Amino acid sequence: MRRVSRGYTIVEVIIVLAVSGVILSAAILMFHGQQGKTEFTQGMRDIDSKIQNVAKDVTASVPTSSQACSVPNPADSTSRPVQSATTAPVGTNVDCIYLGNAVEATPGKDYLNIYTVLGRHDADSFLSANPTTMTAVTKYPIIGGSTILSSKTYDFNGSPSQNSSLVGIYLGMNSGDADRGSAGGPLFLRGYANSNGGMCVEQGSGCGVITAQVSKWSICFESPYSAGVTARLDIQPSSNGVTTQLDFGGCS
Image 1 (cartoon, helix red, strand yellow):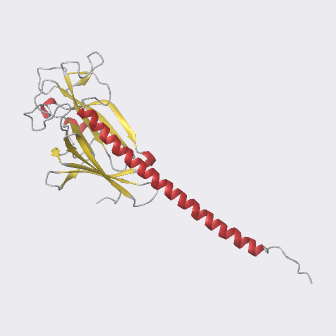
Image 2 (cartoon, one colour; image 1 turned 180 degrees about the vertical axis):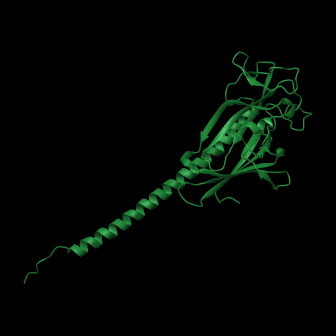
Image 3 (tube, one colour; image 1 turned 60 degrees about the horizontal axis):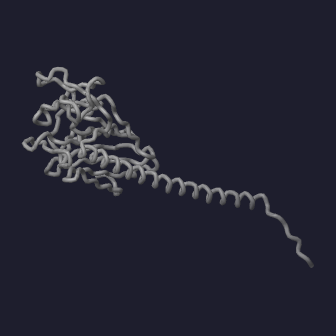
């Protein structure tokens, strides 16, 4: 006697579809999780590279953006450099000198702001150069949209000195300056208690304590894909510019 085959019941079809849906959902979540991890890693390595390139520009005395400036009253030691389209660019005029770049890493943001910092050519120290940020600012987005959790500087005893959302990467003025350096020579880092759109470089009011040189700068980032997944980028001055270390083990 031949057995008559029958089709699937509605309940069996529903069960198969439900299981397939669960498997598909798990696969999609796994794919997005891996994609997010890849983008987070890529974004962190890109920021690492950007900071190194900013420091290299300072070492080579190459401004981030082309600037021309003048000092309105050179006889007045308090007179600051100002942008001017009628004067020669930095490096070829007698008024202004390129001091370095200031990088703004504001908690909650998904980008860095990079400022060109100029000073008086006739000064004999970093502070007496009346460091001034030019109006042109480079906004550098973080790949993948990761956000900044914190930005801290450390003193030379290894202790956190303060929260510093703005850090300057500078060359000093001459060999007798406490903040010394020269093109092709060592850099120094200076942390600021606040940023105020780069204005704290100019030692303005409301900027809190302006620190001396710092030994290390640490920026903590958080992935937008996985809550609690973080990475820390440590930046330290060295004889060749800066050294960086990227740690995906989390932020301390």
